[in-house]
Image 1 (cartoon, helix red, strand yellow):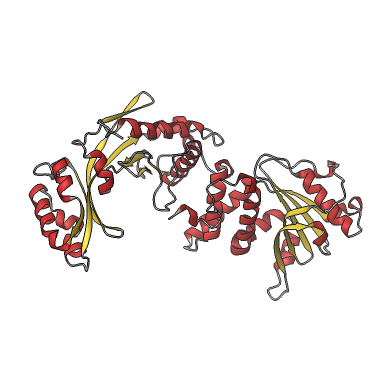
Image 2 (image 1 turned 120 degrees about the horizontal axis):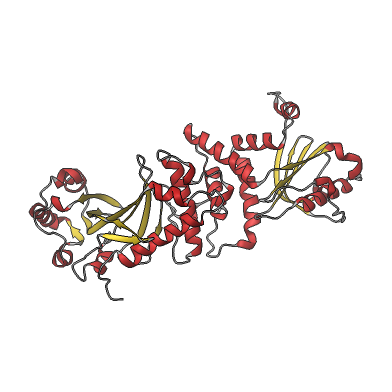
Length: 436
């Protein structure tokens, strides 16, 4: 999926850091509005008094009115009986009643939720800033605008420290439940991704050093956090935005992306790349007979590369393909001459030539493997594009990952490993680089 299709990310090229605080608040407000279960769980965390919470929602036929607003001035807030002053920051909330910011003016509240006569005021920060003083002043002015003294109404005010880690723990738990019940909410999943790209440590991730090899999904989430950090530090590299694979863009012309997967049985990290995946990419590796290193040096350790041959057939999108090993060939197919003569656009009248070529070079039952008859011959297509590419992969053992990643709040060791893996593929995989 294109990265710009995240509901909460703009098309702007810069990171709009000055706007991030408002973006996070707006995204949260929309999620509360569009995901009833998430809103329910957040409210329970804020209104910890179960008796009060039950009174709000115990009558099925009751007239409970809920309104969620952002950027609301204190002068616009109407009558209420009870207030929850909520701090949403990376920093812990200070003692609310020890604050001394008593300036009387008309401040703007980040988010205001009203439920009948209950008022919830949320002040959000994008980083480790204590917003207690600012929140205190907002509550002060709300009471002042209603000709009430704050000191006389302490019993009506409940300070709540809903920091980002607590909030995201709720979000992840709800999203996991919704996924389990096949009711995934796009708003919530995009919100989680937005927050993760801003600060991965706000999400309840377990470092790989505390996981078992069978926890493939948790390991993958941690690798994703390292990839996000890596891409932030390397402006020429972007994290792929597809939901079905994890990886980054690649800087060389002979490959488009570098992919990262976790072996579900061993917990090992599998890193693979597909050089020559299109005719255009193939020009760069078939200038000479392509040669790839049989091992890559990463952190003074050598990891063996496994090479496979990937024949890809494309139309407007992927149609079919073959993944072959050396033993599947009668004689070499991947030559500069064959690349120049046979790859690229092939019209229907020339399909027999491709079929004869593959019959002549491949010993395995390649037609069955790629469903040649059904997907090509019996289709209504008039042409396809064929590429002679490769799949090159390495395996990083789980033990290596677990030794590096031991601290939830410090993704740096894992990010550094990603960086060195990337550099090895970028600079050492292809033995003879084409001239620029």
